[in-house]
Image 1: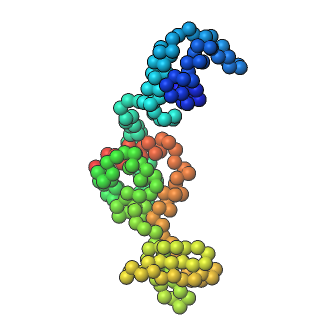
Image 2: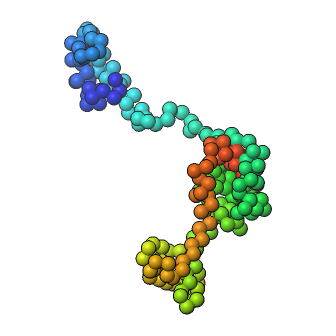
Image 3: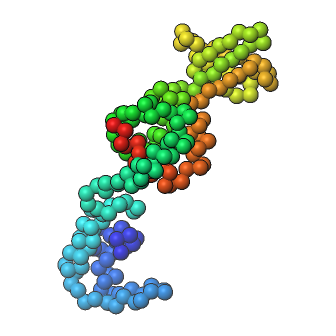
Length: 207
């Protein structure tokens, strides 16, 4: 009823009064019999309906009340530590992860960060930028943060903050891209829900 076109377009009962007093027959639905109510009572009902509409939340909104606090720390820390030892220590030492729960105290943000491949400190899977090394045919080499890389050009940032571009022709010049998040991207399709919950439960203990 709150979403009906009748209730949404009515202002002060002018559309609702005739429906209540005369009844309504809608195909495929039970008939609404006429109700012999005075106009004033129907106007009061209409105002009540509009009052509920004014305070109702949008469609798809969570129920009214205090904000829902989600607890995503539901995994097994020991299983998470075992997963870390088995899978992550090739890029991250335990020492490099120490304090991650202090730097990222919100467990949801912490989970999103490690799944995406950020938040480490001193590890190859940390939050360092993607870098590139360009080696010219004469042996000259240029290293720096990657700006752009495609089949035709590679652009990097030089130590003096200027940018340098190199035209590409097949494998010339030689281009080596180092992406610290590559390992995380390769692991992403392999994570199970349990893996993510367990690793998060382990990381929140690393204060």
